[in-house]
Length: 376
Image 1 (cartoon, rainbow, N blue to C red):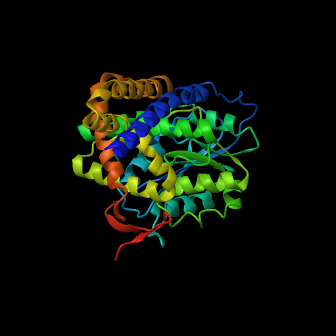
Image 2 (tube, rainbow, N blue to C red):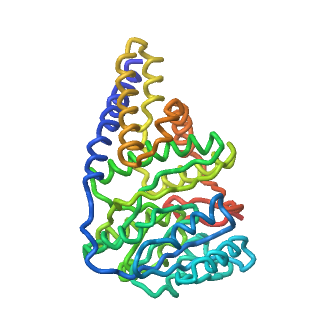
Image 3 (tube, rainbow, N blue to C red):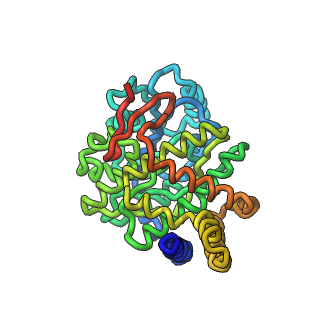
């Protein structure tokens, strides 16, 4: 009992320190801003598509309406009968002045079909700054200008965008959005504050073509599930810097029901554990509520310490979601934070077990180093 109490006390104190650390980490991020744009830098936007996500047309339209001098958009599908094709063609007719090209890639010869589409588009892209963005992303009209401003520093190899999750109607997607907008981003900001950026966030990132070639293009990424994380690590190791953009984007996560949402969460938990095992273990400090409940169960008179941990978690959530992301939804649904924290802890524990994941109708096996392969 004494050993258990000592461990819980250390973990609870660690969770308070971690939560409070996100506040200066957020302040450090908010104060960063790139200089004004000196000249227009041509940009190629790459959009891998697979079916029609909720809100796809408006997501894509936000890229067609960029207020920027010179850019092109390439959009890739696996087959010509993909339902996303009709939406792309509609936008091409609506915005004839935008240079937009649809690419049909065929079946990928390796597990990561997103990487295969990106590889096909890079071969056709005309510009040296490549913005890679998922289909469920919606952006402001200043995204490309902001990215160009950040690439004016010649040492920058990758610009990766933080995102505000926008939930659909289901309570499960609303809970996930709260987790992404508080717990997940808090972890990203803290890592940046302590160690700098040596990883990238997948929903939207930009890279210099010569930097991509320096890290052997997509050849090293094609068998990884978390190709964004691996790309960021390799760029940082090459000597180029990875920058967390000052431009926040919207990640439209849709309205998944309970089971699909749980499968999705578990896939990324298992992938994260393999991509950065030490960091995954360290996520224990992000689970203030479960730690507080466990502490009170073992030592009821510790309720004061538990209250401090929960207050620190609340302050962290308010700063990250409100101050950094300007997310009013988390503030309105504050009562969901404890539910999300408990669910997140259960998924985190489950992530330590199993190696099977499900992605876009296929079943894969995750290997210890983060690579994955189709399960036979």
